[in-house]
Length: 542
Ligand code: VG1
Ligand code: CO
Image (cartoon, rainbow, N blue to C red; front, side, top):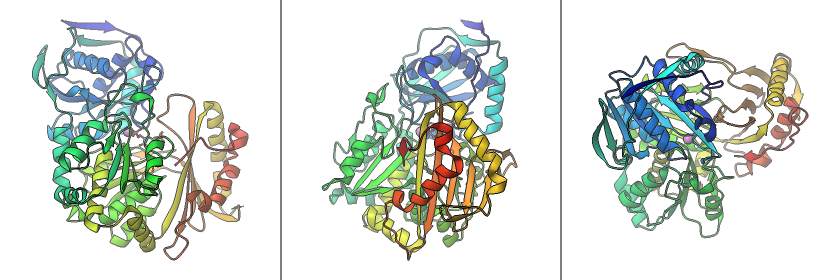
């Protein structure tokens, strides 16, 4: 039976850097998720006659949310839904299914690297027919729709059994329940030199992959253990759990500390990696060495041609503004265009669609290519494996060679979490007000060359996005960037991004926190972080 339910708008259903993220209990309120889904449908002109991909990272409420979205899609005339078995799909796998099946887009349920559970976080986002996150014009339309919503329609029926792979019908809508891993794993196999990687594992190469009880477990087991022959047990925390087993599935040195400890230990494996809640992020490590995400992008760009999928070379590179300039140096050396976009994968979509770039990356442990329209954790891990297999060197060796050739962009991000929103806002407002006076000033012995509030003008569609982060640029090429997170669910998180370049002939083996010490002091001083927020040291360093 089709039913229409009257509702009144909820406040604050405004998508952030990557969809709408709130506390799970907020999403569990009656009609809350429904109102946002209705707004998504309206922002894309309704779903009548359309095909959608639906799935999520398996966190608490994923199962209910998938049933609700199916009921609303069926009630509003969608003809077909493609759903991962059990309602599960990693973000990159969902992006791939959207493209592979030429669908009208998809809904992904995840709060990504935020913790999961009834008392943790939940999220939802819409991806376009190109497989990429909705651009700002669409997320703005979504938000506008949430402010005036009056009703939604659904098909009322008992829940669908999502565990049985196959086609079934739900009202007038066809539902295809698919293996969440198979098509994605085939795509990976088409891009990388699996025989070379398999040979390396067979010759004793060791690896640890920490899936952090999140979505990549089944993908990593299939790819690394089943298809590539890595030892059984290479993948740890491989079963996705609704609360991620209490883990915080954010693949950085702080949260993936078990993996860090193993990799930094005496008998650590040759290669280590971790992924986040929804499988789009990656952290990469060698024995005794951590690869910063910005360096990872640069190394991948310089070596991508070693993988069959990129053997013809890459068209260009894009990085988010706060990501270090390491990739720019590779682009320059290779004669490739390099683009600087605001934070968030949605800004890469146009460049990828237009064929102007092949690789993209963010300092927040995100790398990807034109194979999908999302960042892709396992893709990055497999490209690293491919490069390691072909070059036959260690991760440390590859990094050392890279820095010697291109120089090293010492880099770190300092996060100050759970700040009172008003205080964080006041700090940014005060800093913004001083920007025009800063150039020429000296701080910690360094002279400021320029200071601005980053605005991006999309070279493909001309759309402009303002206030994307405050940049302080120094004469020696060093840089401090300040911005507030757009993915949190509680208070404000201040991100301070620090970067300093050392040429290949300089000291390349310093601890980044030591190399960046003057920048760290300058960042405190310039923004008066302690005075505004009461914090003199960050909560998380990456
Ligand atoms: C963070 C990262 C950003 C990333 C976004 C979504 O956003 O900084 O680079 O694109 O998360 O990633 P913010 O606004 O909190 O800085 V995910 O894996 O959480 O979808
Ligand atoms: Co993610």
